[in-house]
Amino acid sequence: FGVVTESQLKAAVAAARARGEKVVMTNGCFDILHAGHVAYLNEAAKLGDRLIVAVNSDASVQALKGPGRPVNPEDRRMAVLAGLGAVDWVVPFSEETPQRLISEVLPTLLVKGGDYKPEEIAGGKEVIAAGGEVKVLNFEDGCSTTEIINAIRGGRG
Image (cartoon, rainbow, N blue to C red; front, side, top):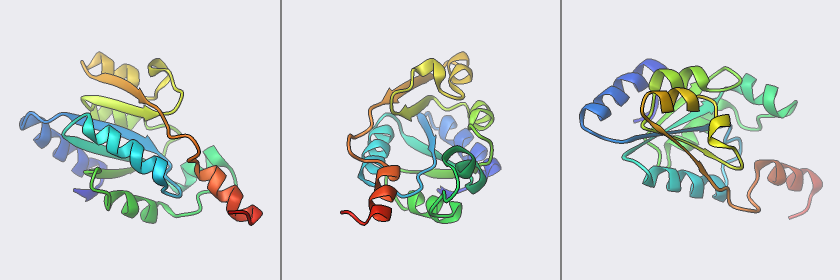
């Protein structure tokens, strides 16, 4: 449990499957953890027995979000996520998307938040081909890391 390497994750998932547990996986930057993230992760955790959170590496976040991001380095982002009761395993990935990692882990259920279509979600095709499911959960309105950063920079709040 907690922050793990890919090989540790694969072993943990194999053991969970052997116990008949449903493994849920999600991913994201989780740069500044906020109430929307926590609600989303709690909802994702309720859909199975174990929750994996794959976290973008610092270089991956910078490529996606631009200069000045992430605000928090990956070791801190992962430590905060690992401290949440809803989260079983936290694993980093360095690519732009977690498609390779997801296709190797093949969770029972792949979950993503926001306005994605299931067929657009990285790794979704592989999960479905292996007999798993892909589900999109709604984000909480008014909760955004970018909005928080802009509020801090703008001095409002």
